[in-house]
Image (cartoon, rainbow, N blue to C red; front, side):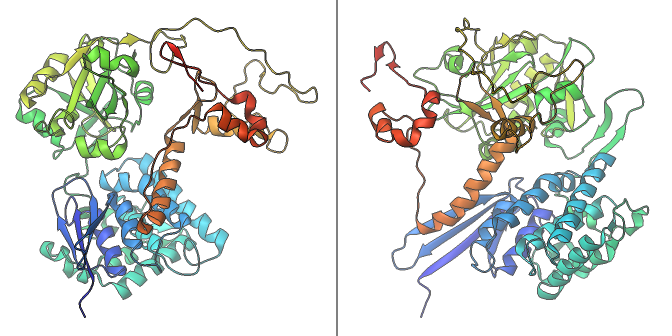
Length: 565
């Protein structure tokens, strides 16, 4: 009897020698998926599963981005190997901490420290649970994936010694792989001659039990370990400069640097501390004077108006509500920050690495709705030298505004040039960057209880960078301190509204990813519902919401008229 459905797998990867391929293919074979078709030369890792019913001929497709999404999708095919939330948290930790070091060829001491911290976390987890593996007595796909990323990163940095529990765990995981999945059986690697060596064994021999330190002898690195970095992202050579914050930088295969060189555009490039935000960049990598400027970049999306990359002077602000009018767009516009997956799909760049040079990666043949449009801040073009990222946030290109515009013109990009408002130091401005509205009459503050000291009134010379409350003493104030000081939440200038910062938003994304993986195979489809509730419906539940009544914001007008409810 023939099968009533067929499944096809397709995956895009940088190369067969990338660590992404090794992770995905080893997990695939462990869950008995043996027929993935790979397409190399694509910097975006994406695994797609297509199921077709031979009876109804209907098809169902699921896609996952990145090696972690691919592992999650593969694990969902086997009920015995489905990832638990704790296992996913370890995958996420390895993805955030180790993978950037491994794939970007980081070699500076600061990254060795990050690896040591991660290994110590592994040791602490294994000691606290007193189990052989991260989440219990049995090996899981998370153990296999995290172990591969950990030992590959150790090898790339010439680090060999790890604490005893972590050492035993790595040895067990690699022994399991060597037993169940001989390295030579992984397809793709044969064309590079790597089937002649056993990387599982090489890695087992590389790590040693002992205090976690950097291995002194480079010869201890297994031959060929460096090939685990993607072929499209070779290890850069970064050496400290003698008398400046800038560092000599070389990345011969960087696409942006190649295109600038091919276009004969004069530029300089330098390495610096890895920075995720413009604010962090301005602080940690200061420019010589006001004739130089870093860039601040926003990647915005509107369902009707399309995609826009806004590149600003760090002192400038954008009012997204007025942006459509400034751009001369017809119809209503509702610009929002595009998520990382759209940024990756459109410009092939990660958050924190964006800049106007990314337009070299954009597909300009798309229609107006799908094409990325570039908007430049006039204030940025008024400086002598612009500092902007070449697809990575540990380096910057120095280029004049004229040469930048020449490069963009050669690419076929016609940027829109606008003047944006400037932020005055110390001035409190609305989040959109518009004009400051007259202050409303302050509401009467609730008097604190007499038996509590006002801990927020700090003494002269003290800062408020630590928790001011104890959990048992004042839980609401303690909780508020935790989420603000941990940089998860920022308060907005409208009561009841908060800004979810990257840490907290990442938590929300992980929750969605895990939950979607559970419910979507059941045929459940997601939907958004209005957040507004009419007064009569709210009052039906008045007993339940009584304590929240003072926090309820009532919307009573729409345009120039009053709402009926």
